[in-house]
Image (tube, rainbow, N blue to C red; front, side, top):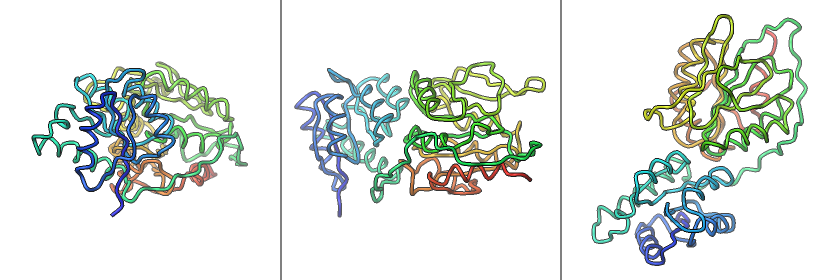
Length: 349
């Protein structure tokens, strides 16, 4: 049986040895390398391409949480964070770790139950992230603004009034493969809900804006939705849509602890579904977890439309898989076919 390749990251030689021993005690895993800090880990992830990373949260030079943010934005991999503080757990989940395990548990090798905690976390990681078997790396289209030719009716009779895109791990690359191919004359607004740490969504919007015919910006509280504009929901908050008179307006709200993701695809879709009803198109792209499934349930209950990304092009087949398995996807499309799958909803009816 082929074993899953693991990179162990810890600044302490003693703990690296303990973590390595615990990882290799599970027959499904083998340690292919060790790193002494986050910067060392980033170099070795690029070179060794591990399938799973077990990383200490507190290290010199670059700590595990800073490295986690870089991994999830640049080269997404499932990461299990090992830490000592409650803050470590909160931030590791916010930044995209699959699981958090307390260091005292996984390094206490005298207790079989304690050792099993890390094994269970690792096994859940590779199972939940659809890495059984490991998927090949997907070559994504270059994010150049190669706009396809689309025609719209002289009188707007589009079937859709809002396009809402939800994504997480691998989302920035997926957005770069879709948005540059949508025309600047798109007759509806687009709202993007991308799981990212605070401070990352505006740079993402700015980068996308440089390669797209559409105008792309980070969403702001109180903005009226305008056709041909892509609004990227700011990280750390919830973004919803409200009706104000004849206008539909973005509201950027503080997020309570009941929501793991900030922003949440579910929260955004649940606000949009009753407003747009059958004129809402939801697109669920690559990402770990199940965010978007409850929202798509609301979309379908109001006769809206859902497209899910196919496993063949997903970095992580978690979010779209959950939507597909729940029966809410009207269509499943590979990333390369997604612009055309979206644009067919804007043909004359």
